[in-house]
Length: 76
Image (cartoon, rainbow, N blue to C red; front, side, top):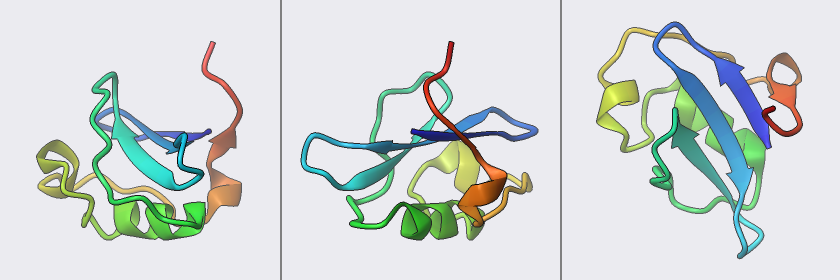
């Protein structure tokens, strides 16, 4: 999992059971993006506010599409 702490909440990119990657926003368990084979594609959708998540897509918050700027691992 990759996560990024934005000004409006926690952004997460997770690997699903189908081995595709998805966007989660905050504590909401909704898989907002379609499954992508590549986590960088999810990060790009998040940066472009094209995730399908109204709280994120309609916000002015920013994040990086570069996964090296995200934290990797499990949230504690």
